[in-house]
Every structure is written in C-alpha cells, then in structure tokens.
Length: 319
Image (cartoon, rainbow, N blue to C red; front, side, top):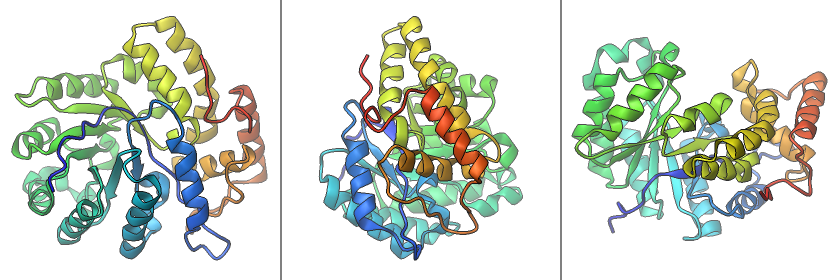
C-alpha cells in the first residue's frame, strides 16, 4: 500500500539507542525511551536509525529489528521515519523496501560516506543512489544535507535536481552549517514547482534557523527536550518572538551540554542527560565511542540545572 500522505514538518525527535553492559540493544529500555518521547504533545513523528541511535554501529539486521520493535511499540500513534544509512545503493534499496513493508511512514536518506572522496563532483552517483531507493519504495523521503566541510553536501544545483527528479523527496534535513546557504536553500526549495520542506537540524542555533522559515526540525536533542522544541516552534509559527527568545533561553544550556566539541560525543551526552534525569538506567555506547569524562558529566549536570530540567519536568514543559 502506498503511504505518500505523510507530510514531514513540525518537531521530529530522533531517538537514542540504549545498550546493555554487553553492548547488545536493550529492547526494554528502547521501548521505554520511545514511550517517553512519544508522550510529548505536539511532535509530528519520530526518527529511528539516525545518528542519535548510533546507526553507524548497528548491523543491518539490528536496524531492521529496530523498525519492527518501533512499529510494535508505537503502532500508528506517531509516524515513524526510518534512517537509510549505508554505502551500498543496493542495500539502501532493500532497507527502504523493508521499512515500507514494516509500516514506516517515511525515510531519512543519508549520503553514502564514501562520496566524501569527491562525490559532489559526480552528481550522477547520488542520482543513481536515489533512483535505486525510489524504485524500491514510494515512501516520502527526507534527504539529509550535510555540512559543506564534510564533502558530503549536495551543491545547490544537485540538491534542486534531486528534488525535481524524485518527487517523493518531500523535505531536506538541513545541516549545511552556513546561514547564507541555509536561507537560500529554504527559499529555493519552497519555490520549486512541487515545493520541498526544510527541516533544520542546526540545533546549536535553532532559534535563528527556525526564524529563517524552516518548516520544522529533526534533531537528536529532541530525545531529551522535544517539549521545549515544540514550544519554540509554536512560538515562531505564531510570530511571538519574545516567547521564542524566552524558550530559547531554556534550551541554550542544553546546547552547551550536548553540542560543544567534539561533536561526535553529542549523543553520548544526551544519554548521560537522560540518566541524570531518571529516564535511562544506564548510558552504554558502542566503541569507538566512550563514556564522557567525570568533568564533562559534571558539566552536563550543571547545564541541565541551568535549563531547569529535572526528573519531574523532563518532557513536560508548560508555557
């Protein structure tokens, strides 16, 4: 059955992946985490098998199991967006088809990592990657736009051509890292004959990014502060800048808790935050990631205190 009605917009948290001491997926803890995030009023979907879930360290079989578990737990309560993360276009097509067969509502398509070696100079490669995926599945696609410095970003002409060639691309998760390009992309994607939405993942400057006209956000930080993100997005949509600034003041300490250098630790830190907030019992990560230092754990605790996040208030912001 075709499921192209899902419209990717609004606040879409990317959930974390709990592991046990043996580094196997802790399904019970994962289900509890899904329930926590899904309980936040106002979110429009949940993303699984993304960076926040340490997808780089999950096997293909584990990624499939995560889709099954997520749909079992959430049913149709909250739409599920499934990350397609692989260097193989053939495998990407199979993953897309499997996600659709399991009842997912949309796909988040990552660029193949090997394209960092100059793939932006060969746009026909990413055209072929998306062709394989769209031949296998008619689910709506959110295309992940990486920072320019990664060499995995799509030049703007390539991005627009992808959206024109493959009409199931309904949104871009933008992390280009350049405010000027960010605004231009938002405007040019909206101006296409079949407009494409922009979901920001510029979580370190979320207020400014949303104010430029994004249609929503897709962020790992939503695994901890989805309620604050919903409130911020609502204030921006209503044009209430003073309210938006006040909510952003609550969010800002979490930016320092999660997104200071090195960025690869961002999701480790989110797990530690949920442990401190009583929403996860343990915070194991798969190597090569390692547990933050004692000093950094203390910093996370301070930042949560500054954000007025407590076990009683997490996921429960009220204006």
